[in-house]
Amino acid sequence: MSIKTVAIIGCGIGRSHIVEGYLPHPDKFKVATLCDLNEERLKQIGDEFGIDKRTTSFAEVLADDSIDIVDICTPPGIHLEQVVAALQAGKHVICEKPLTGSLAGVDQIMRVEKTARGVLMPIFQYRYGDGVEKAKRIIEARIAGRPYMGSVETFWLRTPDYYAVPWRGKWATELGGVLVTHALHLHDMLLHLMGPASRVFGRVATRVNDIEVEDCASASLLMQNGAFVSLSCTLGSQQEISRLRLHFENVTFESNHEAYSPGKDPWTILAANDRVQREIDAVIGDWQPVAPRFTTQMAHFHAHLEGRGPLPVSTQDARRALELVTAIYQSSDSGQDIPLPIGADSPKYADWRARTQ
Image (cartoon, rainbow, N blue to C red; front, side, top):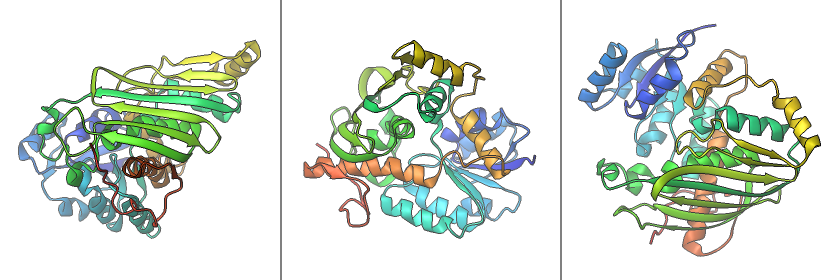
């Protein structure tokens, strides 16, 4: 098993990648380089973790043949150009959400991937944790039965202090609001467990903060499997909650309510009867605990690079989540129910920005 050398691009959320994703796996990763335009933060994070190589030049990182993985943790508005450049430089790439700001951008990345030597993994760390992974195993074992209904709630709080950071709250640099920067995690978890949507009706508004992008949203989804799902999001909740509740023929699942770690146990898993409970016990009774969030996603990525497992999150997964964002914005602007999939003929394909109220 080889140790992969990593360059962190952006030391904000990049610090969490180090703490949760790389330090727990010293046999798999070595963070060799930090890159950030903020030299004070570069020094602080470098000193904290003993990372000597520090640069403000992204081009310098790409030219460094000793770097295996470029981990992009920069503001969303520059993800597209950095991902494309890193793939074209022959690097493996990890990119924080959102991968980019339009379906056209995602499709451009997918075209580059076809000839790239490296592999791209978008970040969706909320998929990992004992609760969500038990639910996934039960569903894949066909124990849950027909899906009926779901609700997904992202009730977080963001104040003017949060938006004092210059790139936040603006279409050009944050690429969207609560749907893109916050609820995208929970909505990916929904799609991961319940499959893709086929029709979407949504509304967005800006009510909590004086910003360009939306901070409140709601949507009604018809899933391909026939289930109905409601999505509710706000950045004006005085109690921060992330919650999924999914109702199937034989099982009801409810996540824990931790805002930033909803994949962890305890999850409520309610069986319809004793027979179903026995079936559940048969598939998760010997459960071995898994680490949540970045710790497990990065471990799976390393296994994939070593040829020992599937890519944990793909660009197609990111596209599916961003397609849902696009449909909600399009529905809110048009007042219409939007069918999926969304292609290049959509008015929001190249630019999904919504007319917020």
